[in-house]
Image (cartoon, rainbow, N blue to C red; front, side, top):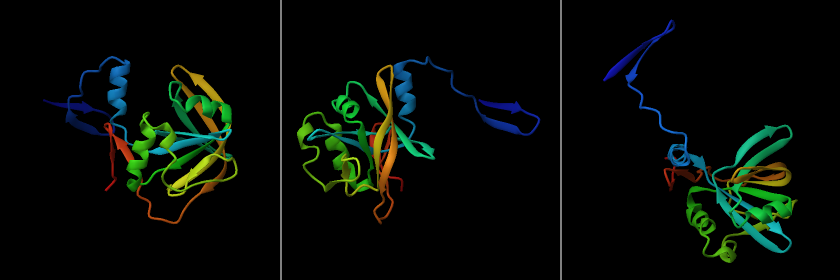
Length: 180
């Protein structure tokens, strides 16, 4: 059935909107599955140990000073090392890095996450994935606990921007996607 909504500026014609649903965890997750997001590895060095996880929660916060944020579930194995270390790197993945993303998403082989690919460090000492489309080397400025997650606000100390074709890995509706 078509609805017509009148407004002083224009006429909007469209399908009747769906009935709203409860704002609960299940519906929230279903809604968020519809939001495409870039895929990043969040990495840190806690002493000599390397830790990391795959995330779609990296976001720009400020350009002056250059700052970003990542949201990490407190139950993630890398959460406490990120909190202790006070440094992290956001490594933006390319389409061809889906296997790397899957390796970091799996809890089965935490020690093997850094076994493949080229890894270097920049200013903070956090692991930087050499093949990343961009890598943001950060010092934790704030760690804000909120419900099930910690929001890590990182002041960027240096950025790696390799010269390469920009084809990011994207996550949508529970799986990795390409933009093309």
